[in-house]
Image (cartoon, rainbow, N blue to C red; front, side, top):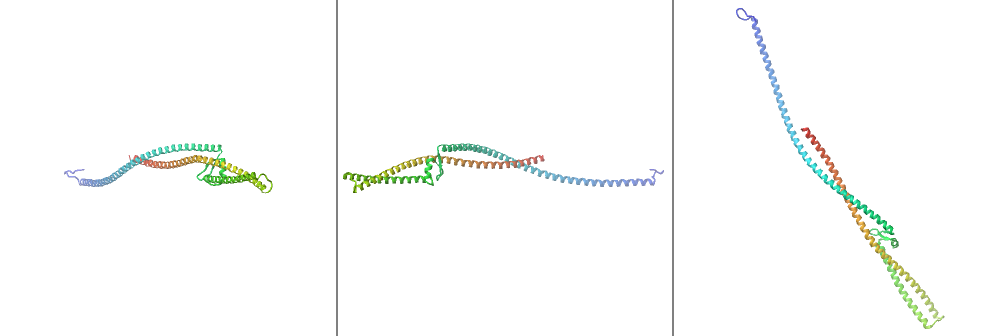
Length: 308
């Protein structure tokens, strides 16, 4: 800047100084506005950060509550899973016991079947046959079976009753023949006495008496023959009936015992099979529930790992 001799600056110098001060004032005004804008931006950013921080804190609280809920669910599921595992082990042991019992019964059944087969072989070897009875088949000999066939149809008791009736009829016929024989003997005795008194004559009434005597002798012989035959048939029938009754009682008792044992075995087998099916169904249900629980536990573990 140039200065005059009197010590005062030139006019041009004064103008330059005023322009500089004006420029500085303008710069200061611009810097203040920028600072205010920046301050507002900072305040806005701080406000947004506080809001975001509050939201994150709420989310963290909600997630922590959700994690606690998941932990409780996982503990409950774990307890249920352990209970299901224990129930599964108990059912498995029960199933194993049932299977062992079933195998034992199957072995006993096989032994009984073998015994029945041997019994049938013995029946066939001894010439026995099965005849139908009202309560079931009975074992008798071949001869007894033929006699029972002759008695017609019906239960064994009915046919034996027919034999008894036939036996009684034969006995009645024997008694009647014995009475007829006694009567004819009396007639022959009287004729013999008359012949002795009058002597042998061949004409008149004596000839008629001789013919009557001969006819009476023939009838006596016929009655004797029929009596012996009836007695033989009666004895044979009594023997057959007694033998039949003895065999029927013995074989009927054996057959009833075998049938009762077989029925008991079949009932026990059906019961065990039903229990086995129920146990298997229960095991399948437990295994399905176990799989579902395991999947839920895996999901809970994954959720817990993702929260860490």
